[in-house]
Image (tube, rainbow, N blue to C red; front, side, top):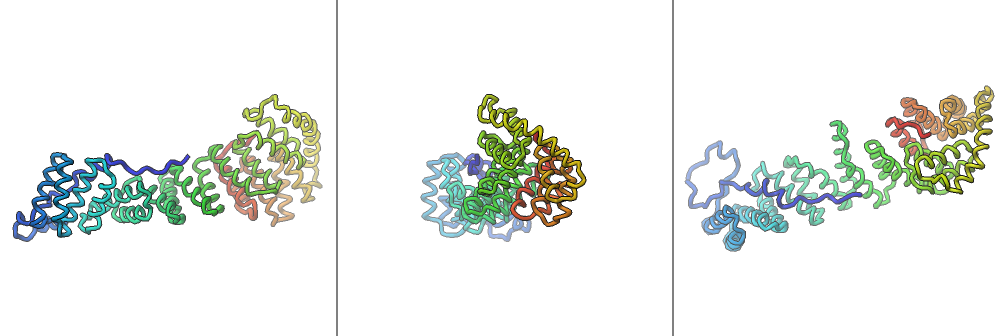
Length: 424
């Protein structure tokens, strides 16, 4: 289950921003009237408090040094009335930030940071940090437009905070800018893969949810297809394939093919799925496949061995499976079968159903040679090669699949590359 990215607590800011002010903030009257040295100028602009603001600044400085929140609040109230220059206002913002940290008041922290950033006086080395925390607070307050503005500025300012990209991604998604959010997620995925690490699963989950909410199903499935590459668990396979089942409607052949991939990835976890699979395979005339899938359900514990309904199916289909296997084996050995594309494909389908995938491959190849544009034969050939462990051949065959099984072909490609053992 996805948990919204948490904004950082005040304690995380204390070490970064709590002592970050410039020892360069001094009253104007104390400034020496001399040109700054070059090395001092390189460090950034000195802040000069105006004459009227200087007494309040001293009180703020003393109160912060003593961590006296009440005194700091009083000094800020005095200083806000006296602040007249951009430098004064920057300093007000800084001490608002410090008071917010002392009081664990994120609203005041955010106000202080905004004043500092908007003054235009933030030292270049602090731009990324200040904008990151301002964006962090805006994100926590669900002000996604502001969060995007600040987090983009933080990125441009060189922030290296690990939470920046996920928060920026989520801000774009929540603001309805799905393509921008996905672009950030995709960049994070690519970077993690290039570094040899597994991307965070939330880089897939949140964009997929956003695409689903926007009824952009194809893009959602693109994301989920990428997700199973990095998280090839039965649960992630099931989540993805269940969507394809819902999309297939009344196409029984398509439903059966989706269920076959669910079976191959150990993603069938409900009795109803085994019941549908057994019913479709029975109707299609694959008794060996019916028997195999029910026994797999029993072995996994999804189907109780005393389940009378499945017991009845086994009782009727087991003898048929034995006679059918003998007939299919005989057909497969006949040269005439290879010369008849329809018979070759039907025999190959039956062989795959009974688990004899190696013998099915040349039959599919013969059928495809006769009908090179048939997407179903192309698909079934790739599946048989994948189940037989012929990964390179399977990937090549599946890449050629067009039409309504193209998505399934992409998912079988992922499964083939993962090297999952064939279901038995």
